[in-house]
Length: 280
Image 1 (cartoon, one colour):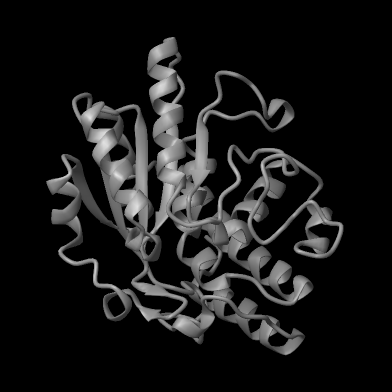
Image 2: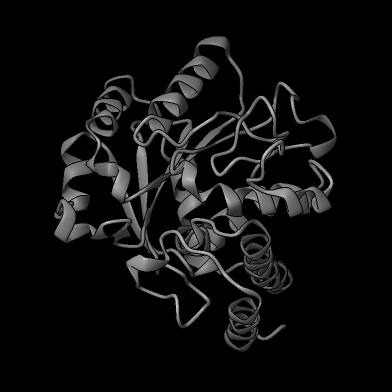
């Protein structure tokens, strides 16, 4: 079902704003994992501005939903959203990844309000999320756990150990998403370590699979609804995305997995975002 027009407009404009802020922080800090931060933006905006039950003024609220960014190198995009929502003063992001700053390239849950787990050693976030979801079931809590994986980290054996345990325990109170941008630091995922047939792998581990365009706000919202309606098994959303989405000179290029921006490149990136996403 399509999103209401006013809600879709809010999410669309917010995604544009978040992309611009990612560019700003990347210029300030000298470099970030900007390609993956851009590819995940529509997914995280859909979560944080239309789905997650959270309270920036009480970020340890016991009944909040949990979010695990398993692809921890996407922390710059996560931090920008948390700052925008008021978990901490947004101006603090000017010191992102600088000595003495609480904001490392991979966010630390002990230092950054709104972060539920420290990630970055790839392959472990799904296990953490499953543990949280199982704990909620055992204790009778109604909050939900959300986990965003990178496709490159699905090379890790720990992902598949976790996938096996989730189906064994029938973990259905968790929403798992894969940012399938098809690139990692070493190049195309299918050249480095082929994942295909990717959907069939998840199905073989006992998961329901939903494939979507990870930049289509209606498809994202419909997928979240479908996952929450499933009460018998875990579900993974394979979100097909574009590395560097929104900046034409970054899109579908491994070299933008991690990169810096000088003032001129930053200006061009902002112009590209505004051209691709005119305000509505």
